[in-house]
Length: 268
Image 1 (cartoon, rainbow, N blue to C red):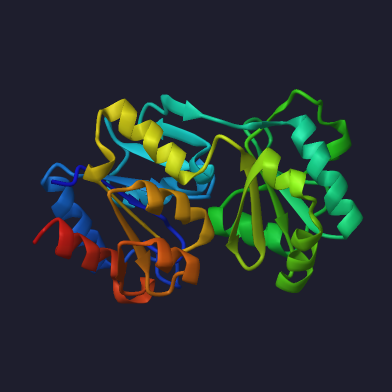
Image 2 (image 1 turned 135 degrees about the vertical axis):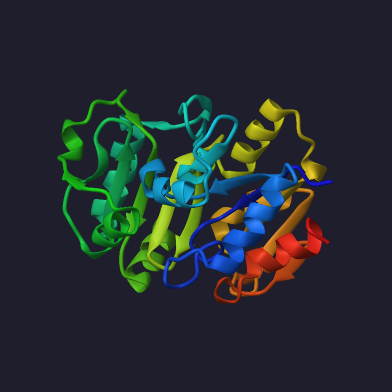
C-alpha cells in the first residue's frame, strides 16, 4: 500500500488557472482518509504554498511539505525542519558574475530577506505574483560571503535564458543541481538538494520505503523525485524526458490528472 503521494504544484496539481479543482480536492481527501500522506513538493518558497496547504487541510501535526525544490523539508504546522540544504552568499556572487556577463536577469531567495534581486524584471514580477510575495531590491555585492541563500534563479525571456544556459561553464553543473522548471525559470540549488533527495529525507524520517511512495510531476525539477519513487508519474502535459522516466503517464493538469492517479493506484 502506498503511504505518501508527493505532488508538484504548477503544471501538476494546479490547472492552468492555478486552481486545484473540486474533483482533485475530493480525491485527495479520500486518500488522506485511508492514511496516505499528501505532500506538496514544489520549487516555490513556503510562502507561495501556504494558501494551498490551507485549502487542502494540510496545516497540521505530522503533515509535511517540500519547498524550494527539496532544499527545505518541514512540518507544516510547527515548521519544524526535517532537512535543509542551502547555498551561501559566495554562491550567489559566483552565479551573479555569469548573469552580468551573459546579460540575463537573476533573483534569489534568502531566509531573512525573502525574494531578492539587484534589478526588478518581468519574470521576477511573475515569481512574486505566483507566490503572493514581495520583491526586495538588493545590491548582491553587499551580501556577505557566508550569508544563507536558499535558491538562485536565472530568469528571462526563453531565448535569452537558453543562450545564457548554453554559455554556463561545465563546472556550474558540477557545483550545483540545475533545473529548468519553466521556459523562463532556471533554478540553481545545493548539489545535495533536489525533490528526490528531499523526498528521500522525508521518507527516511517517516520510515517509509520508496516503494510505498508515488511522485507526480511534469517538469525537469520533478525528474529526481519521479525516478526515486516506487511509482513515478508524469503528466500528459509534461516534458518529454519526464515522461520517458515515468512508470505511468496520467492525464494533463487541465484534466484532473492527479485525481486519475489517486483513483487508479490508491482508491482502486
